[in-house]
Image (cartoon, rainbow, N blue to C red; front, side, top):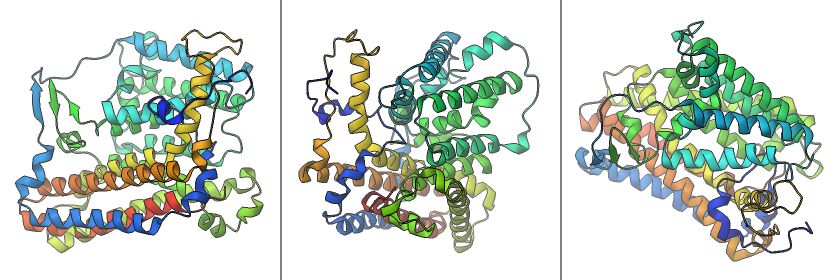
Length: 468
């Protein structure tokens, strides 16, 4: 990239790079040779022991201590009613930007790292915005690209149709799986023209859903990305009414009773992240009969990839439901499986969020530099409206043992912290479901075993050789 002669220190742009990752580009493969030289077995054992000791500590401490971190501290009081509804202008601005990016995808460069559309979708949005949503709160409520346009089209009138309650979050689950299938199985999901058509279809279909079924209903139960982002927003450590702060996830405990399909949506979020790591491993490629040293290309394994995504999701649903059922039986709790599942399933969200950050960290460090380069010269003419200066993209830090070890430690830490927080959340949720603390603790034994095993899986996915 001759027009970007100045080197960039990748760790110096980490904050910007958190908004810069792509599904279809995997620069982290190059450092796997160094990762394989690390004592990853020690990391995995230490992570699992950390989660196991958390379980043991919760069984020994008084119940009030287990719940205390999730009791919010009120810093500023505010109205107890519904929060302020966003006006149409932020949403309309996002819609205009979306349409401009679609036009750039259709008419601009075919280079995925030179065209702004793939960078915006797979980098700025998927890692940057999703991470920000989980850390800060529900920004998507204000910035989604449909609310304003739907208000202009439908006004304040009643929805044309009513989305059946019996469907619950099923449309959102289906939509989220469609997005994942496109990202994992399509031969060229980062091709600007292909992605432009996909984004245009998604934007149009979602806008139609808002107009027909009502914006609030459709974004909550029909549009998959909005439903996922709403779940992650519940992990933010602060929230209303007023300003209240507690351990991340406390708002999940205070939310109204969720439905079974809302629980399935939370588990689907976790299954998608897990399969995104699994389908790159030698183990998975061997399972579907592919030699990783002679990888035939994504177009040759579309069916296997989609089937694997769906199978992983259904398997996770079943295993989690079985763990909840076994816990209720052990504790002889007078709580229905549906009620317990709906309350406990959202507690896996910290795992999904931690793995999301860990899995894409190295990609963020690389593609964040491409985002910086695009911002420095958005039209490819040497124009530098933000005064960022020329940029040279480097991946040298992925070939240095010390930096690779540091990155892996951060990744492993994100995975383990996510599991610890999920254990704490699940125990607090069980105490609210089952009045007797002893029975509540017993009910968590199968679920704790599930989470310890998932800690091993998450850390193994980070360390396993990649062949796709």
